[in-house]
Amino acid sequence: MRRYVFATVALTMTLGLAACGGPRAFTQGQYGDPEEISMLDDKWNQNDMQLIAKKMISSMETWVATQGMDQKPVVIPEMPRNRTTEHIDMTALYDHVKTALIQSGEFSFLDKAARQEVAEEYEYQGSGYVDPDEAKGPGKQKAAEYFLGGTITSTVQQVGKNKVIYYKATFELTDISTTEIVWIDHKEITKHFKKKSIGF
Image (cartoon, rainbow, N blue to C red; front, top):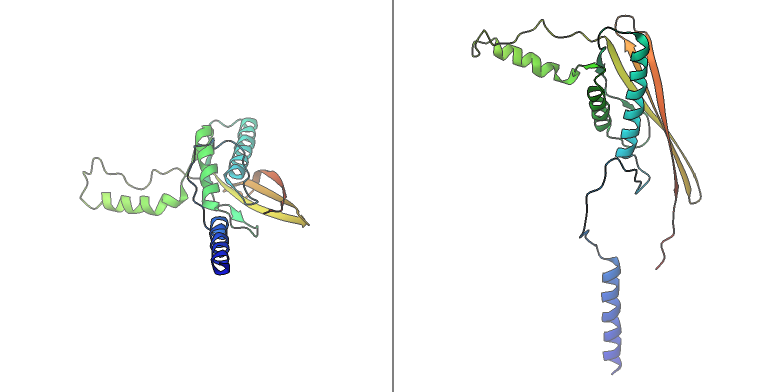
């Protein structure tokens, strides 16, 4: 009888531990608003990128409006530099800024990364395989007037269960002819987190 009781208790405990400690699948989901601010953890996220892109483009539009330019400035965005200790997808941030630049309608955007592909396409179209009347060639590309560069830094303060993360994204526009920095601005983001104990 005792063996039966012990076996039953052991089986019950095993099943209970398996239920508590085993992996659980996410079985239900729904679409969310990408503009909605959500912080599920203390990592860099897409909301941070959106906030930075919006601030930088708005500031650049204001700068352009004060310059009295007859034509849109021709800009080449450079890949932002990550000077934080955290892994940040800088390509995603670059794409956010690039998209915002184009959609603003205030700038002419040149894609530096596409230059090699364009050069190869020129070579192919001039090889004789393409109708000469339709072939495109070098010599008509726009010249960039400005470089847009950016840097992200961060500091982390943690005391007990409280944690504060501070990000600072600084962007600057450099005149290619003179190397003069003609515009600069930054966006600051502060996040507060509190670690909660998990009870059983």
